[in-house]
Image (cartoon, rainbow, N blue to C red):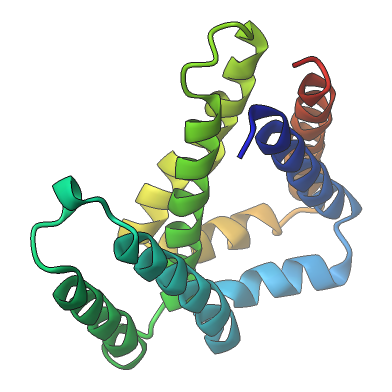
Length: 180
C-alpha cells in the first residue's frame, strides 16, 4: 500500500467515524453498546481477523517459521475456531482488536522509511494512538470497551466532542494525503 493511499483511506475512515459520532443518532449509541457482546459482530470481526491472520501465516518467509507452515496453519486455525466455543464472551472486541493490529501493521509499513515527507508522521501518530494502544488494552480487558461506550453515550455531548476531534483529524489526514 502506498503512503498516499494509506493516509487517504485512514483520513476518510476517521472523517466518516467522526461524522457518525457527531451526528449521534439513537442507533449509534445502541449499536455501540451492543457491539462488545454481539455474536454477529464476533463472527464478522473475529472471522475476518482470523482469516487475514491465517493468510499472513501462510505467506510467512522461511526465516519467520518456527514450525512447518501446515502445522502453523492448523494450530492457529484450531485456536480461531475453538475461540467461538470456549472464549465467546467479548469475542467481537477481541476480533476488533485483531483487525486493528493487522491494519496498523499495513499503515506503519506504508509510512516506513518515507523520510522525504515529514508530514507522514501524522499517520503513525493516529495509528499508535487510535489503533495499537487501544487494541492492546481492549484485547486484554474487553469489558472495558463496554464500560467506555456506557460512559461515552451517557451524555449527548461526549460523543459529539470525540466525534469532532476524530473528524477533524480525519480531514487533516485527507488533506495531507494530497501533499505527497
